[in-house]
Amino acid sequence: MSVSKDKTTVNRNPWAWVPSIYIAEGVPYMIAMTVSVMLYKDLGLTNTDIAFYTSWLYLPWVIKPLWSPFVDLFRTKRFWIVLMQLAIGASFASVALTLPANDFVRYTLAMFWIMAFSSATHDIAADGFYMLGLDTPQQAAFVGVRTVFYRVATIASKGGLVILAGSLQKSGYPVPSAWSITFLVAAAVFLALCLYHFFVLPYPAADHRARLDKGKGFLAEYFRIISLFFRQKDIVIIICFFLFYRLAEAQLVKMVVPFLRDSRAIGGLGLPTAEIGWIYGTVGVVALMLGGLLGGFVIYRNGLKFWLWPMVIIMHVPDLIFVYLAYAQPENVWLICSAVAVEQAGYGFGFTAYTMYMIMVSQGEYKTVFYAMGTGIMALGMMLPAMASGWIQDHLGYINFYYWILFTTIPGFIVAALVKIDPEYGKK
Figure 1 (spheres, rainbow, N blue to C red):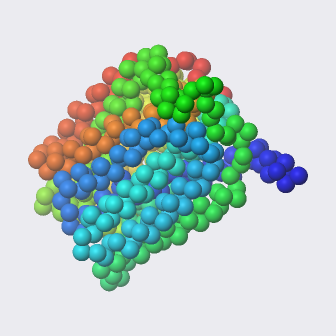
Figure 2 (spheres, rainbow, N blue to C red):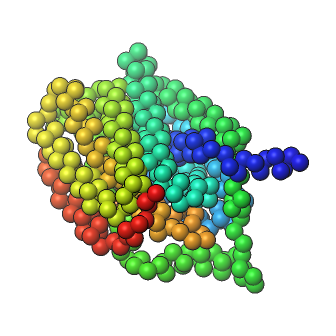
Figure 3 (cartoon, rainbow, N blue to C red):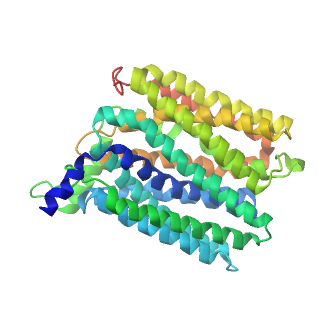
């Protein structure tokens, strides 16, 4: 009787778990990709070193397709979600403990790597769970919701945590101590999320370990599943879309915090840590959320094909704002907030097309593996340009760097022209 009662949670309202799943997915990713940039900037590393070291943290997301079949073949997605959230919380606590060490860069990067690996595995399970727990119309309806709450996680991490670290520094705490306290808070919050999901996540009937083909061994099945992704029609165009749609943004996002933080004498805006948390991590992310929510809504109404080109344009054109900021170096905080908000809203709106296209090409029996393959290729498209962005900026300066960003938006338009999308896909 107890098992039967548990299984009634199959039909649990998606609002009870979709938002919290994507908060848990977003926090560690944003800490690895953005908060770590602010951390190492405060601790005195150069832009070149910051971009290079933190971009390596993309690697677990790049190679996660290699172990995504293990998530499908062993245990349930629900099991992996809860286990990885526990590991992520523990890794946050470990970062806090290693920050005061003399060789803090080596130790904290090791802890970030553990966190990134756990988070990438969590993403495999969570994205698969999303597709198993919702039907296609619900997936389209909730794509904006998941984007919004992913952005809530962004506010909580690169907004709230950065503001907390900056406020502690203003209160007299040394930089390493301020960041240690900040990461202990992150660990506590994340472990609470883990406990919540242990009790609240539903049990979709389709959430079970994948079956091996009769008479085939594990390795044969592993490579068969991986190869299925690359046998899709137009796979070259699909891969190019994943790699180049966000080429400009991959470089831009890595240098936003250094630009806001660096002194005006070297082309930056000279803002303190806490203020960056408010402008980029809070106001900017709210705009990103609203753009993502609007993107999900309009795709739900008219379909992905109808909105693809408006989304590509609205995503890339606002990059011009950073050219203006680098030239004018305005001191008015509200003007800076507004400029960042416009750029982030455009990015949030345009990125919705990327998410829906990835879901579209991830259908079939192995949704989890296919989606992981897509996100892995996407991460590679973010990692390589981001690694070079600090070096490019150091050699070009901020103004010329943002001209370079405008030039690198061109591949995003090209790949959007090549993809093929069913006119009815994503409509209600």
